[in-house]
Each structure stands twice: as structure tokens, then as C-alpha cells.
Length: 81
Image (cartoon, rainbow, N blue to C red; front, side, top):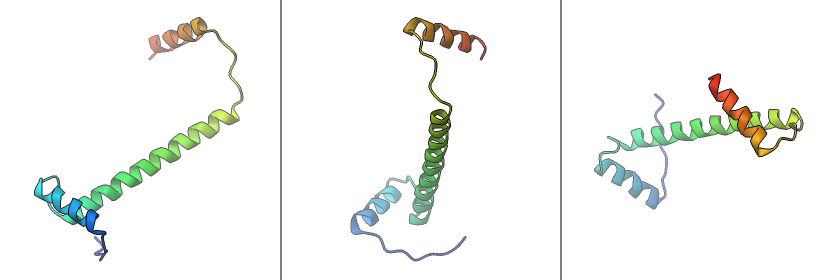
């Protein structure tokens, strides 16, 4: 692992210390690595959602359906799962 030296705002340093006291993490390094991992996963999820939205927008408009038609289609798809 790469060793880094970082400066934390006082409130962030206190938060990290409290996480260790509560035994959520064994060290500040573990907590920071966990938070970075969470941020990376969230970024990957955001990219995935953006890609899906873009694909949906490019596919054009869906056919217009009544609530009953939509419900019937959803039920039909659930049976196939």
C-alpha cells in the first residue's frame, strides 16, 4: 500500500477518532480507505445510472399505455423472471 500524509479538518479528525473509539474501525487508515472505497462505488453506480438514462433517452418515446395496460405488462414480465 502507498503511504500518504494528509491534513484533516479538526471536525473530520474528531469524527475519525470517534469511529475508532466506537470500534467501527481499527485505525484512521482503515476508515479513510473504507470511505474512499464507498466514494468509488458510488461514482461507479452514478456512472451506471447515467449510462442507463442516456440509453433510455436515445431509445425514444415509449408507446402510450393506460395504467391497466402497464400493470398487465409488469405482471407478465414478473411471471417470466
